[in-house]
Amino acid sequence: MTPTPQGDLASFFAAVPTTLDNAARAAIVEAVSAARAAIAALWSAPAEIDAFFIRIARELADAADVDELQRRQLVDLYVADRCARGDAAAIAWVERTCVAPLGPAIGRIDSSPAFVDEIRQRVRTKLLVALGDRPPRIAEYAGRGPLGAWVRVVAVREALAARRQRGHAAPCGDELLDVGASVTSPELGLVKEQYRVQFEEAFRAALAELTAEQRNLLRHHYLHGLTLDQIAGLYGMHRSSVARRIAKTRSGLLSATRRGLMARIATSQADFDELMALIASRIDLSIERHLAVSAPAAAS
Image (cartoon, rainbow, N blue to C red; front, side):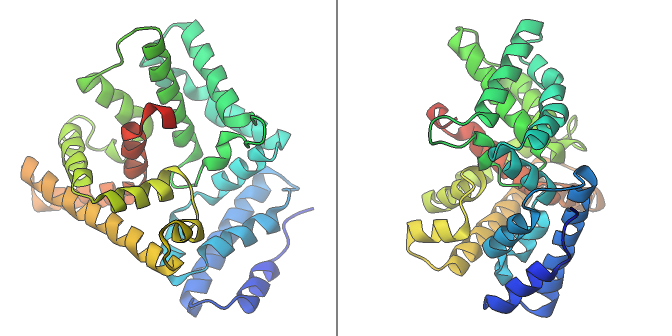
């Protein structure tokens, strides 16, 4: 059957007290409606779609989180959720659209066909196979960037780990930046040749200015995929306080990157503003990528 109308969300908003105003509620309904339509176009009978979106609404039913909802890749998040539950159609979709095209990304590290095939299989096993009581790792995808880009991040990390295990040197310097920018940083497409290194320097410097608590909040939010309630429980805070701190940290990181980049490049104000608008639109991917690269190898 096709997805039901929005009565499920209306019932949720009526039953659960929130601080959302009418505009915020309308924004949630609009985002969810568009995602539901896209999912229905992929699968004529999407499974448990109402339960999925009610769960998303429960996670994000806070005024501070409406922007977060609109940044989420809801269709990809639904696909990942179905994969984690063993849905054969969703797994086939990920294989076709995310795993099969990994060749060029892996090939930047080692282009031999045997190596590319091995890393593809590693990615399949790591993301789509449950280990004991642990669900497939694709359940950790938080929707803060396209699923395909997230899978490429996993593939590149697996490829780098495989090279280290075999005693080969990992890419470094410009080569590593080429790998990172090409497969995990769509926000650098415009500045790949001219400003990419300056952006990396400015962003890393901005990350270094964060406190340990701020970095941990970002890791919980972007890498670990914890909900606001889960993070709040870790820190003994209210979820709205957590949401505000994450939003403030994200905003501060962008501002520090802007200052650092301004000091490193010479361009017109109009071009600089256009550049920063592009970077701001993809800042979540940048945060996730840099935190993943700096995470201990054991955490991968």
